[in-house]
Length: 286
Picture 1: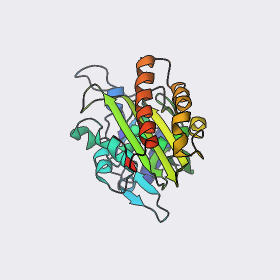
Picture 2: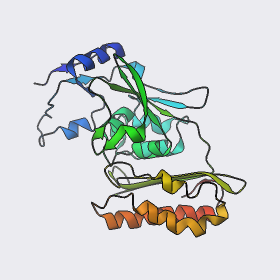
Picture 3: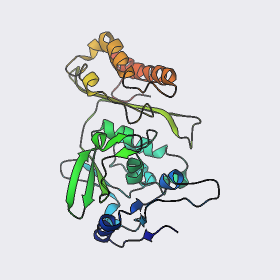
Picture 4: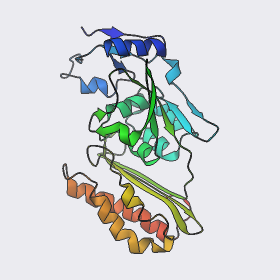
């Protein structure tokens, strides 16, 4: 029988984490599957577990004075999907995470901490330059989510730390695009996803971002590629589009159906850029 703890406060949880290196367990939608040994068999954990679902300090969504959106690590996907404070792309991704029963238990901290290449929330969060706050009994540190996730199932989380919140900086966008592709319309694990954003002022592109999920060991994003459009006019998009598409191809993993992933991603990004170039109304491009 695995050793388990149920802390009543964040302070107690941090102490247990430091002394026992217990694995934090909230919704369990990722961890229970990751540690299962077969149908009908109780999952086996190599380390003690710490059930943190009762830690109210890690729940809720708020907006700070500077516009930063702060999401507690134990906030569920269902709560995120319903909150108008959360940016559209994150709400949309949360709303497409499996069945409603899963969305009511799965937490943003768990989805990030699991670091699955097919995780729904890291992709739009990385696009928005979100950061993750990590706490231990010795202190607190904040790290960009793109740096926190190192690869498939690999993160910068230390064995005495707990993810406490996710911070999304305020940003304004003129055009946006989000698409998730799964085996079926609902309750599907992502086979590929894409988010793209453009901020334009007086016809000039001030910011451009694009990221792909389930396209490699971690979210695929190339800031060098994004910079090719920044400072250019919308009228120049068509002439630069082929280079943007070709370069984004290179950040997609050469493994696991690479041709399909590259072709599908290329079509989605091509559609977004073409719509913007053609003078589409500001807003979300379908």
